Length: 168
Image 1 (cartoon, rainbow, N blue to C red):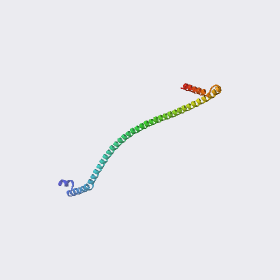
Image 2 (cartoon, rainbow, N blue to C red; image 1 turned 135 degrees about the vertical axis):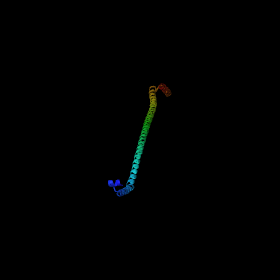
Image 3 (tube, one colour; image 1 turned 90 degrees about the horizontal axis):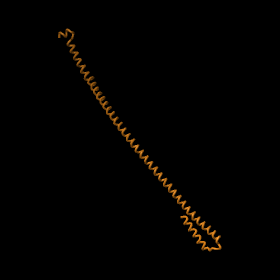
Image 4 (spheres, rainbow, N blue to C red; image 1 turned 90 degrees about the vertical axis):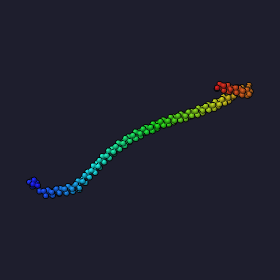
């Protein structure tokens, strides 16, 4: 203790200061440092959790982007298939319409030909009748006194038969 007195240290005062320091340390530790350490630890956990969440969100975002890209590619393929199908269907419809139009034109042409044939036949029959009448009239005038009507009819029928042979 003499050494302490030599340096001017009062041991009672020092003991009181150590006791005061212990009380202040205990109060600070219990009410300030310990809650501050808990708060800092909780904050570190939150930050760590936030970083982990951000990383998982980034991973999910990347996965979603890949999925969206894949679905877009699939949608493009499907749209191309639909477009090709529509084009082929349009071509088939065009060909069917063209074939239908050709068939209708052929039918109209055939009807016209048939009508022309019927008109031709009708005109030919009328011309034969007219020719027979003219022939009969002219023969009657030329041969009216010399030939009988029975011979006239025979001659007319013979002439018509000759016309039919020449027609074929």
